[in-house]
Every structure is written in C-alpha cells, then in structure tokens.
Image (cartoon, rainbow, N blue to C red; front, top):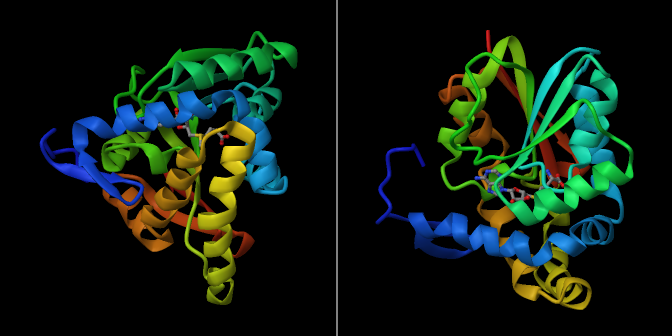
Length: 253
Ligand SMILES: C[S@@+](CC[C@H](N)C(=O)[O-])C[C@H]1O[C@@H](n2cnc3c(N)ncnc32)[C@H](O)[C@@H]1O
C-alpha cells in the first residue's frame, strides 16, 4: 500500500479483505481483547524466544547514553524497558502505541519495574508521527508493522523523524527459509495457537489473526525493498530462528 489508497479500497486483515478504513479498528479490537494476557501469551507461544529476539534487536540498536529513541507500537514495552536502561538519565525513550489498553498495561509494568524519568508515553499512530523531523537517533517497531494499515506511509514517517546517521529497526515475524520446518510451523500456527489463545486469553480469533497476518506480511526481500522505497538507505536484514523472525535495518543519511 502506497499511502494513496482511499477508504473505499480493501486491504488484508489476516486472510480477510476489509475496507481500508476498517483495518485499524479491527486491529484495535484484537489488542484490546488480549492486552491483559499479552505478556503471558508471548512467553507461552514462543517458549520464551521472544525475549531473545528483543534482546538481539536492542543489541543491534547500538545505543549509547544520551540517545533519543522512539519505540513505535511499543505495546507493553519490552523493547522500551531494555532501551531506557541503555540510554541512561540523559537519554530518552518515547514509548508509543495506537492502543490505550496496551499502553496502559505497559505503563503499569514500567512503573512496577521502577523505570521513570527517561521514559515518556504517547498514544501515536505509526502512520502519522507527531514529532519534528530529525528528532530521534533510533526508531524501533517490534511486531507492530504487520498490523499497520499503510506500511509505506509508516516507513516514510520513521525516515522523516530520524536524525541523519540514525537508523530504524523493524523486528517482525517473517518467512521461514528452512522450508522443511513449514508443515510443523503451519500446524503450530493454525491449530495449536488459536487453542492456546482460547484457553489462556479466552480469545481464539485474535490468535488466528496473528497466524494469518504473519503469512500475509511481506517477506524479507519485499520488506527490505519497501524500506528502501520509503527513503531509508543501506537497508538490510538479519534472520532469526530460521526466518520465523527478521530484524530489518535502514538508515537515514
Ligand atoms: C504484537 S504487539 C507488539 C508490542 C510490542 N512491541 C512487543 O514487541 O511486544 C503490536 C502492537 O502494535 C500496535 N499497533 C497496531 N497498529 C498500530 C499503528 N498504526 N500505530 C501504532 N501502533 C500500532 C498494537 O496496538 C499493538 O500494541
């Protein structure tokens, strides 16, 4: 999607096609429904692997004290929490999400963890960032881009708010390069995951959406090209866990 489509056009919501204007609302319902059980489900679904993927992302951010970081679609704040420690008291992490339920759970977690002072919160749609151009050293978005209606528009916005020399990291589910694993991964995603969602979060549909939205998300090369087209430079990616997840990086010069 290029940012030029009208609200009458249709777009994927998992395997369904819905009016463009409806996708954000449907995604909003998913995350409002799962917010309370989101962290527990992440640990169960990924058998804890999501923690390693997030640590790897933060390591790749090469943060230094004093840096300003924008965390988009931050949800309950796993990346924000790790990054706030690294930028220190002179730095700042702005933890943002479009969904007030997810952000509220995240805010409570940060306060419980004693992270205050260098962490700000804001309700923000990744497609329209309320920040001046060139204001962040890093922009991160973890497992969020998949849910955004107009990904190209969001990527352009990330490029705009980066300082020259800064870069964006997109941590997202991707496409397996170890094809032998595909049947097991499909069985897990489409059979086990919705059952687990029903049992733990009382919501099978949201976890069915998760599996479908992963399959509909652009593969590694396509996302890299989209980032390049959005103005980011030297775009590359690192596969993790056989391509279950990839970390894409793109610079602003
Ligand atoms: C799977 S959660 C990821 C949360 C967190 N980053 C993590 O890695 O655990 C996806 C998040 O994307 C948010 N989201 C969806 N569409 C968005 C948009 N257009 N702008 C900002 N956030 C969005 C959802 O509200 C949700 O909190």
